[in-house]
Length: 520
Image (cartoon, rainbow, N blue to C red; front, side, top):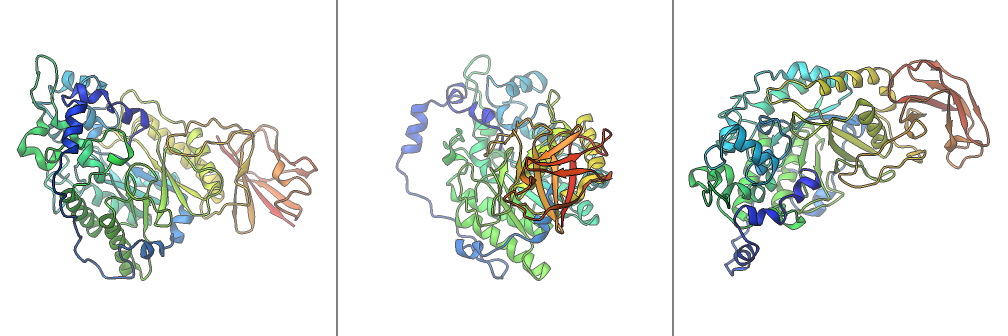
């Protein structure tokens, strides 16, 4: 998905701008037609899981995911080519949007030069998955996720069911396969993300036309029958920023989605599958999840797969099936079940005018998430050619330096009795990630009998931990020893007001400091 402001852009103005009035849309949607028969997926891999809700609820989150805490995501593909950011493919067909204006000025009118033509410009000529994976491992990633297919309906693997894929158009290579080999060679768990479920309604804009001269009424290239396998067949069910229209009800597309996602699972055997929304298409989506889980059992002797979905948009959200994902946001407090934030250090696709998160922001957010029983899945922005912009390069360098010192406070940890303390608390929910933390904001994790206190900023002089004051409700044992990771033991006093810890003027790591606390 994209952020709410981008999605809201097309809600009402698009209907007039793209040549379909509200009355006409309502009439088309309200016409009485026999409902098509639902799609029933064929039987696949045998195993303990079926598409039934109760069967999938019996799954448990594997330990590897709970221990990992940090995954890196390549949310990368041909929409990076124009250098204008997320959802370019959709908004290049929306007059009045900056992407439309950029497209007409740079490439030509979308009736003549459409997204299909931009696909050929994506060469990925500087894409070096092994070198990038070394950087990701150093930055602390324990799993890696490759985008499999975005809403643009372009498969990044050698798709058996779709000619619009990266082995036949653009880079002429199996991008998912390249990422998979690089990740598994380094011992990382490997995942794929699918955004295909929303593609049918998302692509509606490509079928429209200008309502002004000089191209009045000239249809965009998505309306041409020969392009229907990329832009989908004509329909009157656009995505208009309403939860119920994120996924289509068209059973023909449900079959297309199912066959391609099963092919993605069978071709690359992911440890994790991410859906950009709720579970798509009811029993059809649940059948794909069951296949993911059953193939994992066959490979590993036990279920080791993770399924991510969101309480956002249409589709089923069933908290006990897989792992809840929160886009660009966090949950409030410690969640009983493991969960995940997905976010990016910049826009979802490369933008020449982007504003990037700083390393300090990313690390503070990571610590907040981990303290609440969550993982962070972080997209590190790549240019269209596969290289890193300076901001992504700097982020990975500084995360690697930080993890060299502080990884024990993150990897393999579990939440404490409270997630943290301090003046700042992030609001829960998606698209709420602009929290500005201070060194007085602390987050707690535990591992091997030790408590870690992470300062969400660089402390000066003294750290006061109110949760560990004498007589506190969380821990009856007195504090025996306090260490600053990277520096060794530090002086402390446990008073009636707080555990007061003296930290050196010269800190061993930037941005966030970690104290290791043990008890008598």
